[in-house]
Length: 160
Image (cartoon, rainbow, N blue to C red):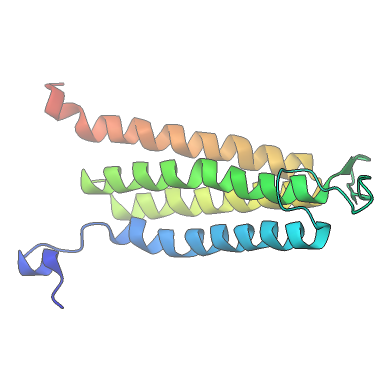
């Protein structure tokens, strides 16, 4: 089947966003599978806190910060944090790309987003607050940068 863009004589519309969406969505799916596996391991089918068969809380995961965390809470939050940030970032990247963003620069931005998300994931799983903070703040910087870039790319439409 012919590509609609090629039929119209256009190039690929979103090659950068499309390319980066592949590993990021695979990562998101792996995080979802991890949350499901943790649910099975904890025998907890609803909620985000593991309960053992006798109603007590499981031993938990000891982190370097000295705290003990519920393994199911960690698994569900890691996946939820990815799902809170992945769609908006890919949407902003796609809109920027459609409005003429430089594809090499956009690749760097999406690579940075990928590194920030991995940092956040490692920070949550390993209890590393610096890695988690880097992932959190870095993700927000990427998103604010993308929306600002999009504003610059579309300002002409509004007469600026």
